[in-house]
Length: 313
Ligand code: SF4
Image: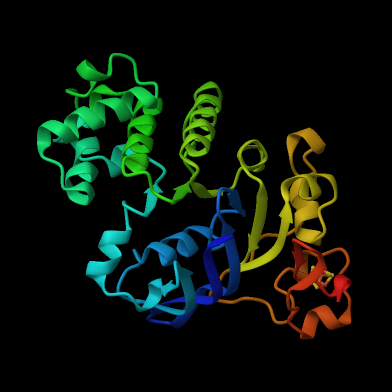
């Protein structure tokens, strides 16, 4: 069953130099009980896509298309209705918890807030629930540590607190943007394991945004790869790692240390000046004449596998 359906989404920023389209014609479904990885290099538009879903983009942005969640189009909802959905039904876990947590409030109070805001609990009851959430996130001595402030927590513990906040109201969809960025490898593994456990226990779906294919391979059932504002491939995780279809995905996988670190030639185009035709053509070893002039649509390879490339037309 589809939980969230994004159709033909375009997100553009109004700048002095004109409109810059950061997300171009993205269509993507998130199913119930799945973890979908949204992967791509920095600046490819994946965070803008997440912020478009949550309606957290700045005012100089134009978002077009449809984002259907439970038969309602999130793009058309008012801010008050969106506030009710954010945190309660769709939760966000962002990178860099130090800047997302309030430095002058204790961790326990911050994790209590969603219970008070979305569940109408009084502080004492919310606090009890917050301590249970901190315990579920494997924060040692949660009753004592709940009284501490963010600066008294290590990076890994702060991310655990953010995860507790995100999952407090048992959301149906969690959007996690680079949740392990900046953490050392051991802590990353612990956070991944924790997220897998908590999301599975609660039967939630997760859209995880990452530039790290290792994180995606650990956590995801399916993967969607973005390049220059567009989705270029959607595949099941096993198919993707055993036989990536899009030339960019093949190169992306070859650039991993495990596969010999063969760098992708050239660099990603600026979104202000995207190449005509296929956006990947200046870097693609399979490019031919058509790729330089025509823009490829998404082609279906087989059920559940979609690729934006003329090689599969
Ligand atoms: Fe390469 Fe052409 Fe496919 Fe683009 S459409 S990825 S340039 S082969």
